[in-house]
Length: 239
Image (tube, rainbow, N blue to C red):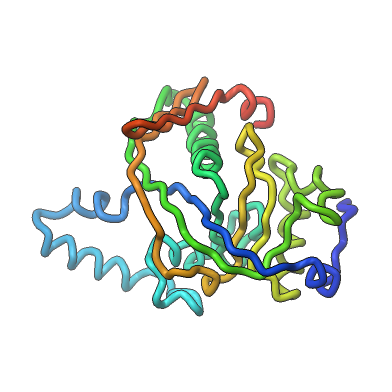
């Protein structure tokens, strides 16, 4: 039974106005995945238009957002995430450091690999790593008074406490939740953005292509002049 029960008024009293530049890593597939299916650029544009018509409507407040910022708010899922309960509105997850964003995505690719019988490695495959600007009414779970529940906020696979907290935070008018990344061995800070209206500007500040290689023992991110490597032993201990 969770020991942290927060009321909206108490959460609202701990909120502060914050500006952050946050990193996020996603598979670089928006253009390439459909281009493989068609003969030329005109056919690709038609296919993209047809696919877009089958997608859920954009979330309120995201009509003018770049797709890298708007997409997470567009879809509900029967599978929950750390701050989103099953079937609830989408959340955009970012990290204060580029390395932390790569650790988060790298963990889930590694998890897919080790859960897939007969699969020995993935990649190297292109990924988009981008930065976005956020202005939000924020609460910080790494600071008092929330930090006393650190063990619940950072549980490796039980998201009950964090999902309940996010629901309360929305009721309190909070736009974003800062927390410790569970997947980053260096425990970097991450932010769950609850509202698409938080993004300023309405498009990424910068983005680059990285190549991701996933093996059972390690996850490696590589681009010219930069490398991030994650030893999977710590993830395996928590898996």
